[in-house]
Image (cartoon, rainbow, N blue to C red; front, side, top):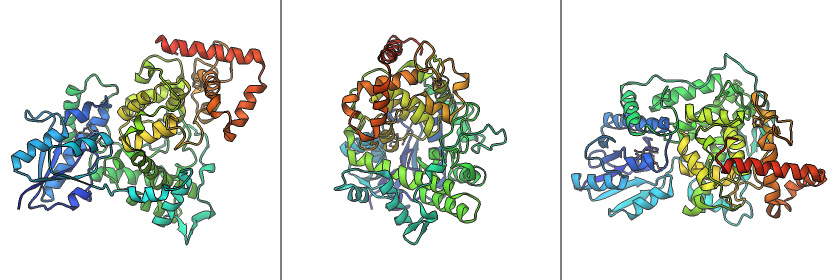
Length: 509
Ligand code: DLZ
Ligand code: SF4
C-alpha cells in the first residue's frame, strides 16, 4: 500500500487529532515541520515561537515512542523548505507518498495554501471542539442576532455541565454579576505553575534567539510547560490553588500581579496539549466537591464551552475576508507604544509591559486597556489584529480575530458586540490600581493632565454619532454629552484632537 503523509501542525498537538485517527501507524508517515513562513507571517513574540517549537519537538518524541514514524524538520535543517506546503512536497517525493491527510488548520490563510497545493490532500474537520462548524451554522441560521449567551446555554445543555435536569445549577445560567470585584495585592497568591526548560527547550531557545532576535518581547525567563504532562500539571495547580478565587476578581488588574487568579491555560489548550472537555470536567468536579464557588466554576466553563467555541464558529462562518473588515473606517497607524515605545499612561505601559515580558495579558487588559485605546484612537483594525496575533502566546487566528476584529474593535459592524466596548478612564480606575501612579489624572476630564481615555472616549462617540446615536443602549451616554456645557464640550474635543495629533506625529502620549 502506498504511504500517506499525515500533517500535524504546531497547534495540533493532540493524540486524538482527526488526521492521526485516520492514519495507520505502519503504513503512514507523520510530517511535522518547523518552517520560517509560519514563524514570520506576523512578528510573533519569541516566547510564543519557543512554546510552539519546543512543544512540537516533545510531541514528535511522544508519537515516536508510541510507534509512529515521524518525519520531523527543524528550522535549522539545511534542507528545510520555508513553507508547510514546501515541506509536504519534499516529503511526498522522499517517501513516494500518494496522499496527504491533514486536520483543517485554524486559519484561512493556511487552509487556502493546503487547498491550492499540487498534492492529493484531504482536510478533515478539526473535531477537538464541542461544537462542530456545521452545528454552529445550524444554530446561527435564521437568527437575527447571534448572542453568545444563547449559544452558551445550548452548549451547557449539550454537555450537561453544571446542569440539573434541563435547568442550570444554582438557578442561573450566568454568575458574571459576582465576578467584578477589585483585587487586593496578595504576596502569597500562587500564580501559574512555572517549568524549568529541559534540554530540548534549551536548544529551541538558542534557535529562537538566533533567528528571531529582533522580535518584540522577552524570550527569557522561559517558564511555559511544553508537554501534555506539563500542561496537565499546570491545570491541576490552577484547579487546586487559583480556581476558587477565579470568579470574584476575573476583571481586576493590579500593577504588581499580572496573573491574579487567571489560569493561563489557553496557551496549552490552543496548541492541543489540553482538551476543553477534560478541563471543564475537572472544574465541575471541584465545584461539586464544594472546593470552588459556583461563580468561579460557571465563569470558567463559560469561557471554554461558551466564548471560545462561539469565537471559532463565527470565524469560520464569516469567511476569509473577516480580518479585513473595517466598519468604522479607522485608518490611524498603531502607535509605537504598542511595541514598547514610550507612554505616560500607566495602564497601557503595564498591559504592554506584561505582554512583552510574558506573551500574555489577561482579558481585561486586552479588551479594556489596549483594545479600548486602539478603538477610541481609531487605529486601523487590521494592524490591531496583527498585533494581537503576534504578541500573545495563545493567539491563533480562529480565536484571536473574532475577539479583536469583532468584540474589541467593532470592525465587523456589530456581529459579535451589540455596542462598541469603549470606556473612559473611570472603568480602568474602578478595576485596577493603575491610575494612582499615572502621570495623568483619571478624575480630570479636560486640561493638560486629563486622562487620554476621558478625552478620546467622547471624541470617539461624537465621531461615530451617526452610527451609534440611535442605539438604545447608548442613549444615556449621548444624553450626558448633550447636557454638558458647550465650552466644556469644545475643550474635550480640542484636547482629544491634540492627543490624536501627538499620536500622528509619533509623540509619546
Ligand atoms: C505559530 C506557528 C509557528 C510560529 N511556527 C510553526 C511551525 O514552524 N510549524 C507549524 O506547523 N506551525 C507553526 N505555527 C502554527 C501555525 O501558524 C498554525 O497552525 C496556523 O496558524 C493555523 O492556526
Ligand atoms: Fe490609564 Fe487614565 Fe488611569 Fe492613567 S489615568 S492609568 S491613562 S486610565
